[in-house]
Amino acid sequence: MTIHFHKRFVKRSKKLSLKDYDLLQDKLVLFLHNPFNEILRNHPLTGDYFGYRSIDIRGDLLALYRELGNATVQFRYLGTHHELYGT
Image (cartoon, rainbow, N blue to C red; front, side, top):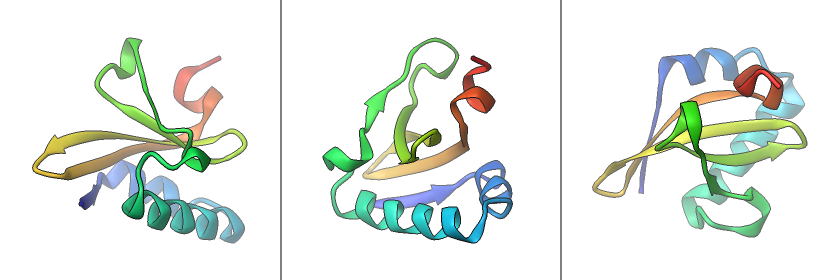
C-alpha cells in the first residue's frame, strides 16, 4: 500500500504535541500493516465526508483518508471530532 499525505494533513500534524505526533506515527505504521485492525476503528463516513474513511489516533483525534485506487490512499484531514464535524 502507498500512502500520500495532503498538505493540509501535514500542516495539521506539525501542530500536534510530541506525544500525539508519535502516536500518529504508530497508528500509521499499524495502518500500513493492517488498515482494518480493530485498534484503528476504521469506518466509512457519510454526509460532507462521503467517500472518506476515518481511523482513530487517540480518544477524540481522528485521521480521515480516501482510497485513490491501485492500493493507494491519501490522508487529507486530521483533527478532533469537533474540528472536523463541528459537533
